[in-house]
Image (cartoon, rainbow, N blue to C red; front, side, top):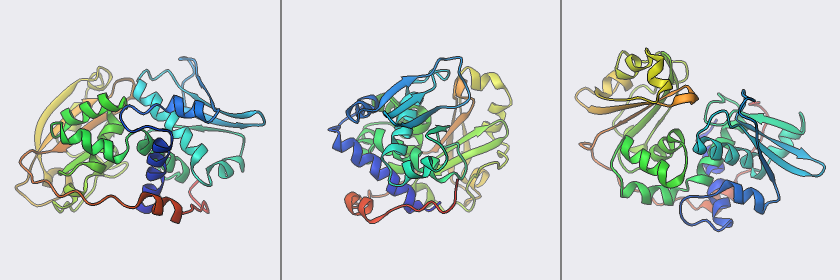
Length: 294
């Protein structure tokens, strides 16, 4: 999927937060849903298997979300994801081709499914608009500490906050989410890409023989949300030039079942912030087509 489509979806989320009057953290997806007369209900904790869903019914629209994963940040992201299916042009029509009820597994885990990826990026922009994220990162420490502060201020999950930090931060930073011995996905900041990595960790790649792989060998590290800090190099993880040292900060994500690794270094230079795109122009100029991807 093109980066342009993901930027479009994210900026649609940012614009929707602004339209509903949010100019500071935290942004409340429950209130946005209520403003749109969308009923939001929690699933019982014993009903596992999906993160949430949306129903387009004759009497209106409803959203449900899972509570078996107890993270409030994950639940809020799920609601934002379902709001993406409601607000993004083409999503309701695409969903209704198949059924009035659509279920999701929000959280950047849907592989190549186009509307799910777009809904994730909508939720990311809705709950963590670029301007607010940059303001928060300006006052926080580089790396996992900064991500945790962003998660606290935005009331979002560590994973979503790490991804948004990588998308918005002015310094080199990379995020890898893994499970067992395999990569699930990764995000690299623009500053990190300037370090000239020749390989990006991709879905189903084997983890290199570094701290993250050793951490994942013990399932309790993940289940009990333990953390471990070590050092690595750009060449070990990203096949980059020799001699560039990175902090490798690792934390288990508990019942979510994944591991988050943040790569950064306070020794690396920052890059100037680029002017933000004309959000309105991008949103208005693009209309999605769903010829494939479902």
